[in-house]
Amino acid sequence: MAIRLFIDGAAGTTGLEIRERLQGRDEFDLIVLDDAQRKDEAARRDALHAADIAILCLPDDAAKEAVKLAEGSGTRIIDASSAHRVTPGWVYGFPEVTGHDAVAAAALVSNPGCYSTGFIALVAPLVQAGLLPADWPYTCNAVSGFSGGGNALIARFEEDRDIAWRGYALQLGHKHVPEMQSRCGLAQPPLFTPAVIPAHRGMVVEVPLPLAAMPNAGQPGALRDALAAFYAGSAVVRMGEAPADGELLLRADRAASDSISLHVFSNADGTQARLVAVLDNLGKGASGAAIQNLNIMCGLPETTGLRL
Image 1 (cartoon, rainbow, N blue to C red):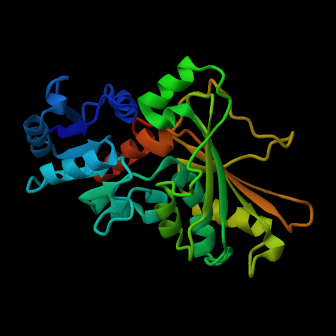
Image 2: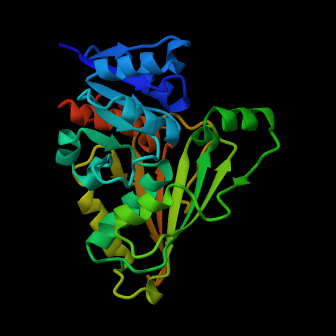
Image 3: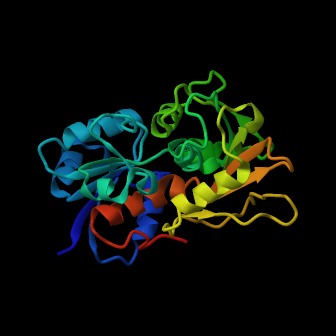
């Protein structure tokens, strides 16, 4: 019997990409609302209660409202918003870090943020292994394609071709910071500097490490080996190859991908290092992660439908 699936917010960027990844998959019976019903509370409640699993592709307040509408239904939920990423009772949907069994058994799963995925993938295993200190004041620099800002930002970049770089969250209150701190077990929030560039999709997340000044930090080779060992069984998280020319490129026409590659770069004497994650903000950073979590929750091969 097909699994009944409802995507609340299916017309948004994340929802549309999820639907693309579900095309041709007969394991799921998709519950679809028309344009008028999508904004009708009663219709949404009925759909949420009729589904086995619901994926919320909504702004934070609307996602919280959807969870209330689903109360009493027994419907399992994957929330792609940032509303529940540090909320008790919700499983953080990064199975490589949180654990596949935890996601498989969860009734409530919160999809990680796109930037957070890169930061956590790099830092959490190394703090856990004792190779990076939990009480260090980390910084994180990142750039993303403009699709991460939703339809309004997509329209802005497509209409104004003069935008070459958009720095934001300059008040240092980006909504991804709490999950970055919490999921890595850090004593203080990282100093996070995100920016948007004129590419539709793609993301680079970097964590610079002044290793010589960091108490009990591991050497670059040990950091690289630890990350490789931690993700050795993953088909989604991979260690990237060292570029021969010493460059990483993020192309404006990057193809969709649901994988993430990790890199450890260092200077010759190992006193400084740069941890770098390269991913698709709409893939492992959003829709691809939702599909991966959906597969795991349904007992299906986790990479089914993913673009790897």
